Amino acid sequence: MKSKPAAQALITVLALVLAAIVAAACGGDGDGEALTVEQYFRRLETLKTQFEGQPEPLARFEGLPEADIIEQLPEIFAQHIAAFEAFNDGLADLDPPAEAEELHQEALDAFEDALTAYGEVEDKLDDVESFADVEQLFSQGDAAAAEARLDQVCLDAEQLAAENGIDIDLNCEDEE
Image 1 (cartoon, rainbow, N blue to C red):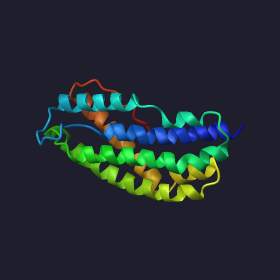
Image 2: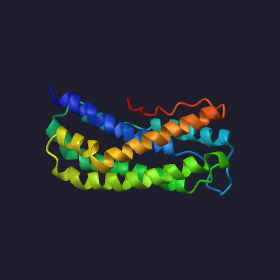
Image 3: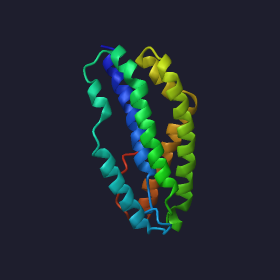
């Protein structure tokens, strides 16, 4: 069954998007006051926990034929982009600690690039006919570069936390 591995690949791609959202949602409380590094990463951990507690929208695809899944992808991906935008907006309102300012700005820049790339993917989802088409949209060009950049921001956040004696696992995707 070729469609099952393709469906798993699609779910993995969308999970990367969600993980990237969580990884970049680090920091302040929106009141203009910078958090300490410890507070910054504890806030991230809280956001990650809240996000992971949400229902998995792709679960409803379990056992459906590929054509049915493909038909519903534009709607599901639009929901992911909306969540992505909401986290990005929240991130933009935060005031990170001095130790995380560079990382914070890199996350903002990476998210802007990703939003642009994912908007382009979203525009093309109505034209896909198979999981292979979807995988191609995510594995080439701007979308792939945006995901790689978000993954690097996530890894950099974990490294900064570790350098400051903070134990946190953001489940970053490490390129192998």
